[in-house]
Image (cartoon, rainbow, N blue to C red; front, top):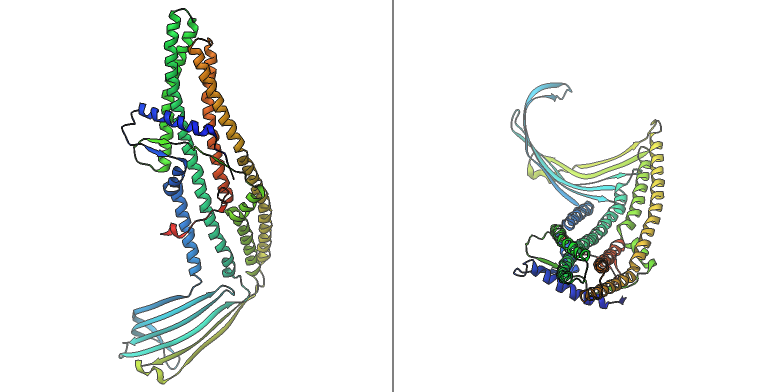
Length: 503
């Protein structure tokens, strides 16, 4: 890393700060406590409390809990189901021992409690379960009778044989979605830094333009008063006096316009930063700028590895492959195995469960064989295959555009060092030219007021150009961070602790 601390930056910082202090004293702000902000203060504050930062935080929280819910779905689930009680009273059909049905009034109550433990098996798509339950039936129809049914344990599973295994694909896609959400949050955080930097420099430029307008107003007021004396002595023509008076009037209007623009930028700045205080704000321009060159290959590699776009490309292909796999397996020959083994005991007395033993087993194999679907399954497969090819083609082009975008951003950043030096030198030269021209005019060695006007315009534009150059540098700096999720100044990958956003 090469540190280039220009002499111009330090001198202009001191001079600019002095001018700004005088300006705000002129506006009667000196009696109030003033808040001073540097660029890093503004960015840190924006990343904590700006609306964009809050929206990014809530979006990430949603993705976080979605992923947590997905992971929890693969943990054992324990559920208690109970009916306490289920009472029925009415006339219903009752089957007699002879096989005939008769209608008879019935009055019953039913109580039950079942404990179910289930577990998904993502590798095979099976569901394994363990059950235990107790139920009681009270019949009040003829005389009060009680019956109990106990299932100490029942073990079973449900296993699709040829079906689409959503669990397997979710195990691949859901973690990628969560990782993409992590990276998206970091990118949004860097975008907040870019936006905050733009607001900072917009307000700073308005602040500087206001101080320039006040300074020009003071200069032209002095020059106009000197010119009136010279005109009375016949040393200058009337048109020159009138030109200076016009310049003074323009300077007075410029002060009002600059103040209006400043108030507008201040409102926008405070709104984005969510600053509710009415205390005066003064922005301090960056006094030191660290210049370094970014390696192109390193930037592109970090962009591919770290950013949400890099993982998004892979996720889109995986989702298209999942859809194709689903289309190939659904609507075709399918089979499912269901098996249950358990112990079930019935007794009229609660304490007699262990005197008898009754097993309860069940095994079934279900198959589905499509005989005639008029080509629906084949059509779904062809559509999924076409969609996969389309996704691959789109991503191939998107990757080319992605790398080209990184290439241009790195080139733009690497040229900022020279651009900043040119802007700083231009500001120094323009300031010196204006000072010399103004002094020569005041002592009468320069009689052309247009030359003075040109020197003043060039000086103002050079100062604005310097601050615009600063804005471009820092915007490019954070844009590179956003595009690669890598801090090339500190030589480290950007990261954060997700748990800090959840608390």
